[in-house]
Length: 405
Image (cartoon, rainbow, N blue to C red):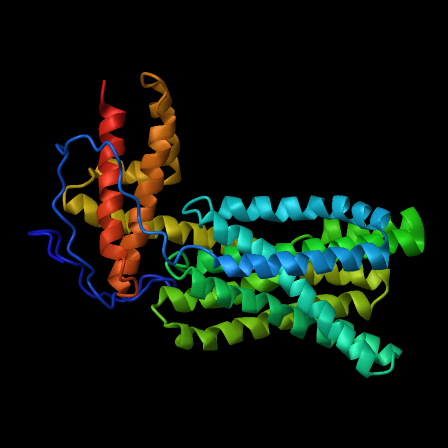
């Protein structure tokens, strides 16, 4: 489509960071900005297609949830299952809160966030349980088989089940899956969901077999020392998949990086399970300090690095709109930096009637606009031009309302 004289698309340049995305297409030219459009009684909204989970999958998950609940209550008892569920909420809430904070810059669609959690908590656990049941029915029980199940089978089967959920999210929500940050967030949420249900089982078994003492130790080990374990494992798969998406890979081309990330997740998972299996308490604590803690620190540093990359990319893309007259350089600084957003929110609260909600909408739509532009220049989103028009109209409307008296 044609926007008249608009912004000349940026020329191809070498990637400034390993997270940059090649500009395979210039996208539609940005229309020349103006601030005199009439008031919009009904604001346009970007298309929701490609940004949500398929409805029929929710029905499948509901059936699986019923089966899991029946299994837990029949095999472990209602009381023990409830105790496990309550305690499992503690690490679950911690991990989900951390991931939502990471995702706060450019939030993912709520339906995909909920689906990621549900896939991990229901489908992935269900698949792992069915596979384990099949192994137990096929092969005679032995210490060697139990060892292989913990160190080999569990990492392979569980990470494969969780990784399949990431592929589903990519297919269903391709227009919301923009890069490494999204991949890490979705992967960690799938892992958090899986750990939640698995913890219910572990805590319930502990209280049945060993009482309060066993339950306390299991809670310390799984709920306090390693709440991010499953989240980190699957985040590796998500990161690799997100890197491929950022560079414009098709679904087929993204399968290779996905497999590479999956192997990394399996290796970390096996390492964690092995450290808890082959050592006594003193050895485990030693490995925890020298291996697991550094891994968590690296994971945290990567998250911080990815967040800063998202901020840089937002500022770069909004700068292109500023060059076309849609934003002032000061507005770009306000919309695309953490300090600017805090200052903007503080200023909006001083306006007549407290306009912080308007400022929040302005920031949200501007951030979505930058992400839309990023998809447009990669040539992978056929709806980018229409979304761009809608978001520009919404951003212009929010500015007018903020400045009106």
